Length: 121
Image 1 (cartoon, helix red, strand yellow):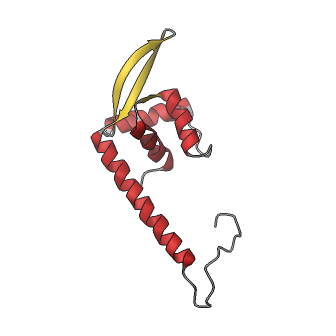
Image 2 (spheres, helix red, strand yellow; image 1 turned 120 degrees about the vertical axis):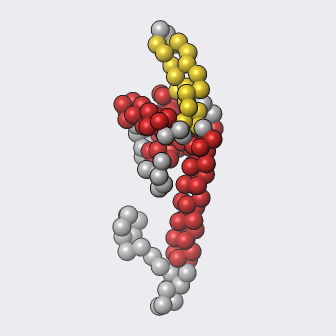
Image 3 (cartoon, one colour; image 1 turned 90 degrees about the vertical axis):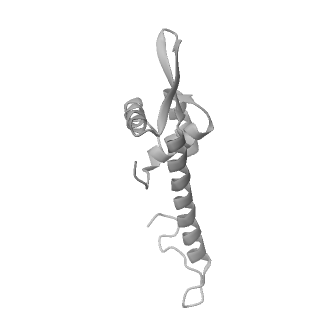
């Protein structure tokens, strides 16, 4: 799988870095990690999990029956951990570069301030 990862994929891998989780647990954890910005629907999540499994980044940890329904738990594979680490480092470097630029004085001697005043450019 190539980096940069899309945000939902990054968040799914991040959620699984802590412990194995089942689908609905992942939906809640991704929502919490993103401060409710990313809301995964079950179909989207399971499609992503299938792709991540096929890419070898996620493995099925175990399955159990709960109220007559199969609950499948997923875990991050060693390859998934490597990709997540590389992506986290790439994002860290980008944040560091942006932070450095925002703190540096411009030619006029003032700090760079986004023109959108609080909104994304």
